[in-house]
Every structure is written in structure tokens, then in C-alpha cells.
Length: 543
Image 1 (tube, rainbow, N blue to C red):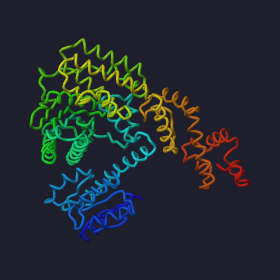
Image 2 (cartoon, one colour):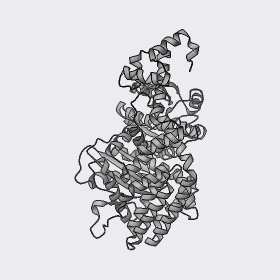
Image 3 (cartoon, helix red, strand yellow):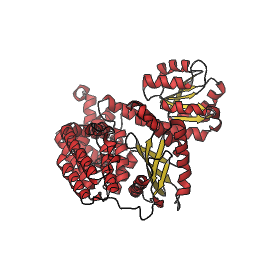
């Protein structure tokens, strides 16, 4: 079970948190309580809890000091929930700088609020644990990587089919059953960054995004999606159809802008699209949001909100239609195909050159490709920074291009740099894909796995995955799954003493008869013969 530590100098608060919800229902056990941060540190070292709920103000060592020491010593886990009073709210700014997961106001705390917060903590813990596991093995985090890819496909309409969208959403535990959706595109900017190091800037913006997610989440269900170090997207979910979005969404954004500026001196420029009733049309709302964003006054000292619904016909221009290049771009990134990537991006630059007055649309099109590169490439941020290392503002230099010729030059540099990177990383990437596919198979052994379904989860074509798997593993995809299921079946039959029909059902076979047929094809004997032979001479069948 997941371990929780409660830290508060008031015994009644400790008792209240213990009894407010049934922690076992969430798979959580309380491993201990502490009266101050110093006592808590010793318990954290002893029990390694995944979650800590702590008061801000305590004697000897307060909650903020505790969070900072743990973040520096142990990294992102344990996750911290900070208990605060209204008069201590100014300390939340400091708490966010230590990447505290969330703050809870004591007077507003009730079972429903605590339960909802715990569910969000558990989701975040799952992501962090998956990330840590893959980092230990020298791989890019699987869940984090595919979550990023999922959102990029959603924002840019890159799903091959509705079925692929639904499979990936289910795998990532994303719900899209609401009545309508809305997208926003924003930028964070602050005069303070001129005197900050890169690490300090990143910390400032990550803390700002954390606050944006927290505040928006109190108004509407939403996902905040970092696009790079300064830009982000937001997807809102609404249970009811809203005819006029501005009076509904504007107060929430004004609250966000005010709070982020008050705490971090960070200004926001945000473009907001129109409603989309189908999740597969969120991309349309997002493109509208980007057009509204491009017409907002990003240089203003004040926060700037621009609604697509408020753009007049004189200001509206259609973006370049890059949809015809969608499949080619997706293939190039997913398969590390440098020929396809070079040819496709060259065609796009030629398209831009035929419309020299359309600078805004060219920048927007280049940004589409930029964000795809950032999300779909392993180590995308580092790769793009290296490609544009001679620019003081790196790949973000695209935002200051004033002519189509400059945009074409920028895009050509991106194309050439990406092709170099893909060519040098092709084998490593393909090995990485297969390792993650194998991990997925092992983690879903009890399901009926098909080539098409697994390919959809990873955003690959079934033919490409089949050929890549065969070439890399020297065994067919289906044959690999069969061997893994039979190996698992042997353990269930012998170690857990399960019946043959129980094993067949548990491992997703159509019937016990079909399971026995497959088992015999792999092992040369039936499951019953295997059990009898093992009982007769177990040394012959040790795995």
C-alpha cells in the first residue's frame, strides 16, 4: 500500500485527517504522525512515505522547510500537501516554488475535498513512479512521453481514427464524455527573467503553470499542457453546452492572471477558441485559440486575453492548411524517416513562399511543426535548443520573425537539424520503441492483445510495428505474445495451482480448448500433461 505521513503540531488536526476519509479505500496506509518537521524527517527516512500532509507553521521546523529539504534530498517523491490558514496564504507562493503538489485550507477541508485531492495525488504519483522506473533503465519515461504525444495528437488532429483516440484515452485514463470542450493557447512572460539563470527561469515558469492548473481546476475540469519553457495549452471540459463562452471563462482567466502576477510577477497572454462538441474537434478550437493569441497584445504590460469570437472579419485569415501533410509528418517522426521529413518540410516551405504577405499564418504553421517536434521526439526540448543554439532565444526565435522569408529560413534550419538528429538516433529510437512495446505487453498480459490495438496505443501503424518488431526481436509480434502468455500460464498452473480453464480465462484466451492448443504448440505437450509430468519429475520443467 501507499504510505502517508501526517505532520501537524495540533493532535486534533492529526486525528481529524486520520478519520476524515477511509484511507484504505484509496490503497493508502498511515505510516506515522509527527508534531514538527524535524520529527517528520526521521520518519520519512525510516518509512519512505509517498505522500506527506503537513501544516505550514510548526515549531522547530515548519512545513516549508520540510518540503524543501525533502525535495533537495529525495526528489519529487514524497508528494506534499500543505495545510494552511487564510492568514498564511502568502506562504503558498513559497510552497509552490518547492513544487508542493497542492495546498489545503483548513477551514474549508471536508471529506469530499480531501478525497478529490487524494485522487489527484495518486494520479500524479503514478506518473512520477512510471517516470522514475524508466529513467532508472536509461529510457525516456513511457507514461509521460505518451501522455505528451496524446495531447499533441489531440491539439493538432493527428489521430488516425476515432478508435485510436479512444484506445489511447483509455490507456491514459482520460475521460472525454463531456458535452463540449474548449482550448486555449498562452504564453508566460516576465521582466524578471532578464536577470535570471536558465534554471531559475524554468523554476519560475513551472511554478506559474502549477498555479494556473490549480486555479483553473477550481473553476472547470481542465488540462494544462506545457508546450515549451514559456508556452502552454489548456483543454477545458464542460458538462453542458455553453452558447456564450466569454462571461463563463473570462472570470476564471482573470483570476488566474491576477494570482500568477501577484505571486510570481509573471504576465499572461492567452488566446481562447470557440466551443467544440466533439473531442476530435478540439484541434479546431485550438487553432482558433492560436489565431486569437497571435492578435493579442503580447507586449502589453497588462495581461492580454483574446477571444476568437471577438475577432472581426478584417482581422481573420485562414491558416495554412497543413492537414494534407499530417500523415507524412507523423510517419517521419514516429519512424525516424529522414527522407520523408526532408521532402515534407521542403514542400511546406515552398507553400509558404507562394504567399509572402501571410506572415502571421506562416509563423503559426511553423509553430505547429515546432510543437510536434518538441513532443514527439525523445528529448525534444534539448534537440531543438541544440538546433537553434546560435540564437539567444533558441527555437523561440520563431516568434520574432517578421517576414515569410525569415520564417522559411527558420523552418529550413529546423528541417536540416531534425534530419541530422533523426539519422543519428534512428537505431536507438527503434530499440526504445520495442522495449516499451514489450513492457506494455508484459503489463497487459491478462488482456487479449492485438497488433492493431497495441500499435494504436503507441501511435504507430500496425504494418510498421509488425515489421520493426520482427526485425528487432527476430520473432513475430503474435508469436512473442503467445510465448509470454504460455510462460505466465506455466507459473499459474504450478505456483498458484490454478485450473486449466481458470488460467485460460485469466490470460484472455477464447476458451480452455484454444488455450490448450496454443500451449501444446509451444511446449510440445498439453497443459494437463505438463502438470502431470512436473509433478512426476519437477526438475525436468524448471523455468
